Image 1 (cartoon, helix red, strand yellow):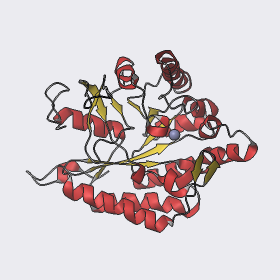
Image 2: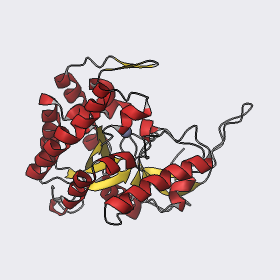
Image 3: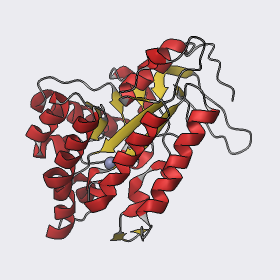
Image 4: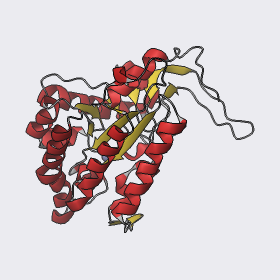
Length: 298
Ligand SMILES: [Zn+2]
């Protein structure tokens, strides 16, 4: 939205701000075994009300965003997902029925990846995603290797940086009797996330033991923390990427959606670029050294 070319010569590259929306809809509730009418209706709200409301806000602000969408949501709401793409936004892979890959065998994880890809191909005119975000933000030992094999360019579930992308690794090991062993970097960009920049844990009430979220926060107080982090990223991490994770069914309910508008206005005031996560990942990869010989310090 803002124009990077407008920066004076020699000025630091402005911050990239990525608004990402995990459009879980009903899949999230199905994945935690809540399939009775009211949990289903909470997911339904995301599609009936929140996503159209968010698309209107993003269109008004002329901002392109990223929606990470499980295959189950694409198969349930194919027209809405086609509309997301038609309005210039990006769709990323987010499992099929919102499965976390941690406990899956390699074969099971391949099946979930393929089921999600097949939903996109079938429902979205052959669409192929550039990015993956793990449901519940955790990966198996095989995930990064599989993502490269399936042609993904970036991943967005880990937290080794706050506002700077980095190269993913494969083959990490944690022996019990000596230090951690880092595997080699691979050609997969990590766009880091954080639980401190996620609306679900802050604002959504869930009672599904062992998962219990009181989420009785004041939205204005949460917004102030998120904006303070955006300010920090702009000041302290030149050329960094600020990735915010929203869920339509959380942030699109009532006045909470005004937080999204406030974050867009704040990003514009900072001179940041509001871009999709794919655009931010590609821009970083272009100026970063390759996986071999990376400048990253461990
Ligand atoms: Zn999700």
